[in-house]
Image (tube, rainbow, N blue to C red; front, side, top):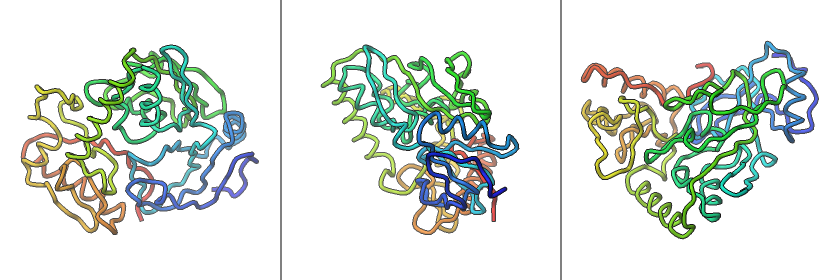
Length: 307
């Protein structure tokens, strides 16, 4: 990639190692990392950037494997100028870099129920992009609109119809960067909402490897539905169940492991490479298919080049 890029007011770094920016702590360098100062800085940069140069918007790396050879692209990572959270009646507008947990807590304090976001790792921008959900609720259920900067620098407001939300995905245009999100939440009692989130956190910590280096759930549930967290929740086709049935709980490859605590969590047990993690995931997919005929679909995004 050319060493000449448009001038910016934010920070532009060449050959930025991405491993420290992902929860799994693996991956090679991006050609460039751009941290824009504000929406205008981002818009001007994309408008002036050669349209043939790939762009990859990156959140906090909570649901991501960057391959060991790195990424031939400009990675755009939003920072402090994009994490404000404002409440107005029953609506919340948050910068795309605001953490899901922070949005949930701010909403609860204002008597608004976005409690399902509390245990979802990552940013609210990522939650919109992936239609993140938990306990039977999804981002699409509360979504009003979002501001995006398109690959050509155009700033646009999009609604749910344009994003065509589906299970764990949306139709955000290639190279578009979410900058702000507006949600409308049901009303609730602040104390009760905070107590519910405390209970959710306790249950999560008891059942998931929250102290390990992971990227959340590795595979989508085969039936296409997330765990509801309800008493009558059916586990027959949960990803962890078919992984267990294939005898793969605790399976390892190099420094990668399918967690003993929750077998749908791929973890870095110390010195894993991206190849270890992705390779183990593919091995699990093959063995699950061989044993059950079910093809597991990745929930973790994998990007970049192998070594």
